[in-house]
Image (cartoon, rainbow, N blue to C red; front, side, top):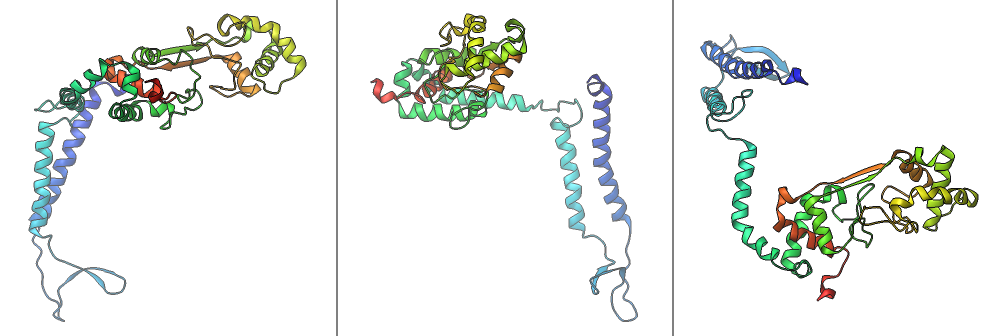
Length: 309
């Protein structure tokens, strides 16, 4: 990677860019210096270059129009002025010091100045009250589609490894304040590899069959009985009743909701290799006021705000 961050590439890009611009100018200049003399032939017709297509489509031997050439000259001058004012030549920042990050920051400041009071007003309200507000709901939906739908889907139904937000199954709790905490600070759910702790590969298979039986899925009766005693290793996180632990983010294994899939092979893969899920924190990026509105919207996906009044 260091080969692509050395000073050589900065010089290389700068030289290549300027050579391309000046090369276009030189080509135009040399072509404009050539004087093309147009003389009619013996038949009174203008001379051609000799290029003929489709039997009678002939290329005439005429110079390029001056207006057309001047448009190219203007384009070249514009390009040079642009490269002087804005970044485009390697690491040269441009005379104006413009950056896309700087422009984005300025736009955020303008947006915060305009909409900040609106979000601050919602921040002072209870999350359930915000969830019942139609305008806040519409704002929250747009925030969700912008920042959350990439993982949880535009319909919030989730996908493999990303929870469904429209049901009542919550890893860390589904009350409004817990959802807000999740959005503000993020989560890092770790399921460690448990193959070695359980013993042999047969033990992993037996425990997987027992886990299947917890949610009423079809399982091998002999293997699930053998796996039941080994499940004590898993009970430290999932509980003796296998209903999970929201303080740790350990899922309930007795329902029919599976984050990665509920087949025997998938469960064995989870036991052997573990899982590591990261929910990013949005406190620094969005700020508490916007997260407050977003949390209210997420809570409303699995609850009826009108019924809470």
